[in-house]
Amino acid sequence: MNLNHLAGGAANYLSKELALDAGKIDTLRFGLEIIFGTFIKGVTLISLAHFLGILPEVTFAMVSGALYRLLSGGAHCSGYWRCLTLGVLIYLGAGELGFSLKRYLSTDFLVYSLLAGYLLSSLCVIAWVPGEVPFKNIRDISKRVMFKILSLIYLSLWLGASIIVVHHFNSSLALAGLIAVITQTVSFSPPGYKAVHQLDSLLAGFFKERRCSAHDAGY
Image (cartoon, rainbow, N blue to C red):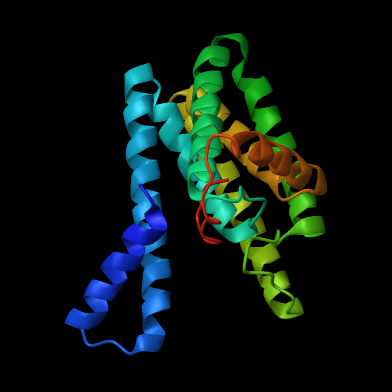
């Protein structure tokens, strides 16, 4: 299935039905591509996580990482199905690690790990956010500062929510979220761009397609 063709067909149909200007068709197509892509990724992740018995961990990891990614930017694969594949593997991996490792970590150690992850991620945000994404390179200084501030605010909220989860819910959720946040932090760092590029090249033999949406929350 070619996501671009599906979104393009839907955009052309809606533009005729709604009598939209021709100049708005591409914008509509782009938006529909994001919606379709997010829906497919969500259904795939939830289905696999439920099958593996790690749905709560994967859900918390996905929310933690995806919201952070929308604000911070980061490296992308060069096609939607590669973005989907890598994103699913990352969030399933975070969920599985959170579920498997919780029994070996004390509450205090996990809280200290969250604090360390928060401080490390904050320093990386100050240094590199917003990370460049396809078709959306932010050069305006005021906008760059805004995305840094929003990312730092988000990290503070995430830290507070994670500490509450550790003490009052299941620590495996917080651990999965921490792994997702650290992975996202790596993705907008210089080494992260190199790593994703190498993984993208590796996946290129399986998926040949157009570049994925710049706003997609995948990798």
